[in-house]
Length: 326
Image 1 (spheres, rainbow, N blue to C red):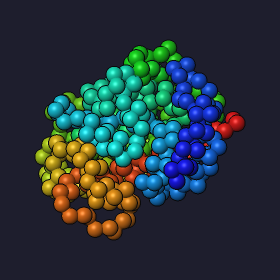
Image 2: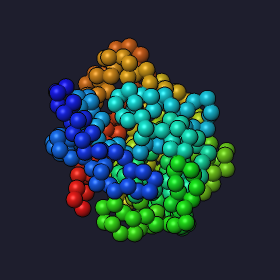
Image 3: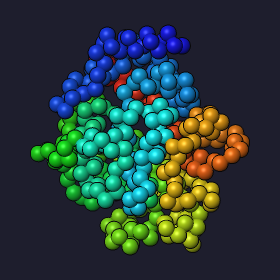
Image 4: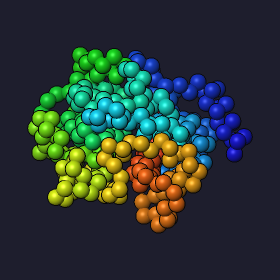
């Protein structure tokens, strides 16, 4: 297996396999070929193993992941980013192109973030992923509604490296080669952790309140994680489930009551405990494997999100193969 990994790496170097520059370098140079393409095409994206990540996926392009922190500044999504990196996700696809941070602030312009995601898709042909905690989850949902056109505003394309809006509201779709508006661009996966209505009211975020639990078709798959009796989220009288407005695949996950709202991003230690890491790597929806002994705080959503991330990573990498020769 090590020889195969070395062989794939050598093939990539020989093929000058690099990412696109700011001017949209030809996608042909990003598309996996040779041994890597063969390995990717044979992966079962619903059962991606630790070996698949280490030997195949880590050599393939990865979608941009935007991790949005809550409103409490001393708890960011950086520990979650560190967890993903330790599990094998490319660090550069987690960092904010503008400042290099691993965690995005939650008081951001959702329309501008939507425009930056459209720019990334145009350059990479990979649909991005969004994961937000608390207030960050509200931003995730706001971005999805911006992309769906819920608020009726045209969206400018935004250069994520500078944060500057470009003088256009369309991109060239890398698959159809046709011009299309930013509105309508899709995200492959999105998730919200402990996002409730109470802080939206306290922070005066009135426009998102009617849409907070409705997931539009601008995302392929969405998972909402809630804590029972969470006073910060405002669900002491019960949890309202997320529902799909149309065709989006929506899942609702109720986390163990002993988890902490503020502490949900603190999952980085889980990757360093061999028994917990093995359990996370093997987890899949419907898994009946017993939870290992010891401190398993935050294990449920860490495993669930890692499964969704690596499956979407695999599917996006396989989709890139469709562009070969186009």
